[in-house]
Image 1 (cartoon, helix red, strand yellow):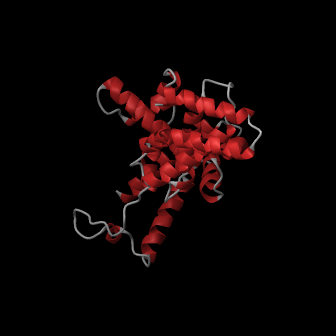
Image 2 (spheres, rainbow, N blue to C red):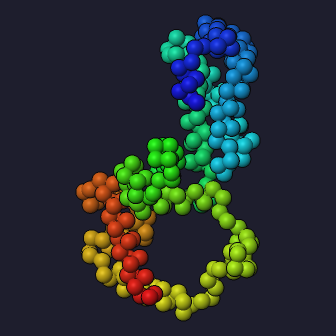
Image 3 (cartoon, rainbow, N blue to C red):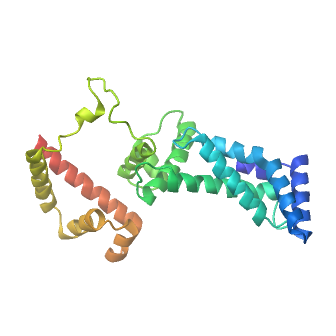
Length: 259
């Protein structure tokens, strides 16, 4: 939508808004400047609300999105310098959209995933839509991973993190009867936890020294992939691949024990 707005010829309203902001730039009266900016914001409210509505039904309340968009519009009107670009609309659209995306990133998560997973989830939405149109069907995880230049496990993680906006209630009914909460392990299941820890310890012992070090840095010390990469002397993408390989190996070891 933003591309369309930037490339479209200016409307009468756009010309009015740019004229108001030009008057703001040359005015020396603070009250007049505030009044003119208020007129700009009032004229452009439909633009802000329209951008906010594009992101509705994604886990954040629509009224909150409108508030974020309108606040960003006010900031855009205060920062805009007439004559420095293609007009106020071209300046305001990315400003408002950026604030909406930042709101999703910082405030939209009930369960907050790592930053890289959040960013990959945003890329995933675009990639899935692109491949859907190109292939005429839903893309496989492998096809998406190739397009995004990441591991299939990373694609799965990005898909799963979407539940961080609206996690399923523990009181939600399940088809087999009961609720989601009934499917959780008992807190007092000491033997079950001991068995799990024992199996995991054996699986970890099968890793190489560097892999065990990576596991400790990521899941015990809670370092980011970039920080781990700095320690190991490799890129963040290589760390992501190392972690995916380790997790696959651990999963295989635990599955073998369960079988």
